Length: 95
Image (cartoon, rainbow, N blue to C red; front, top):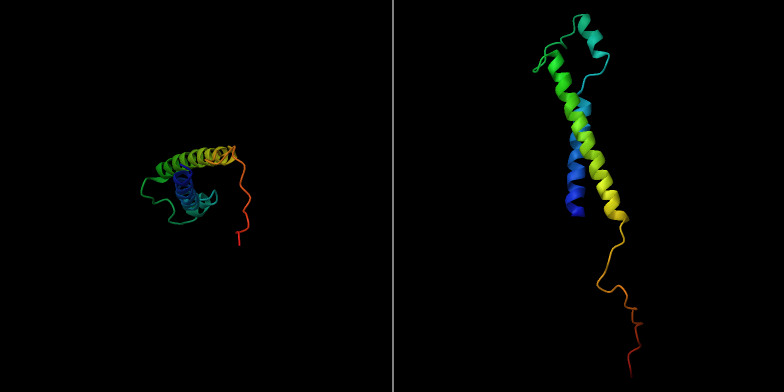
């Protein structure tokens, strides 16, 4: 279970980084006003912002949930087959 959560957490982290890096900054609208070609997007000027915002929110929620799950799994005491049995001290071989 822990291995699956770690792999999922890493994948979510990479996608969250990519989604944040793809977003336009607040100053990108000002560049478009002076002749920049930033207004031509695949989803339209408003649609791309909404889609990226939803993706960012979704990946952030998934990131927080996997982080909390991993923290809870690591904090629980582990039970062992040998719990409750004293360890036997190694003895010297007889001559």
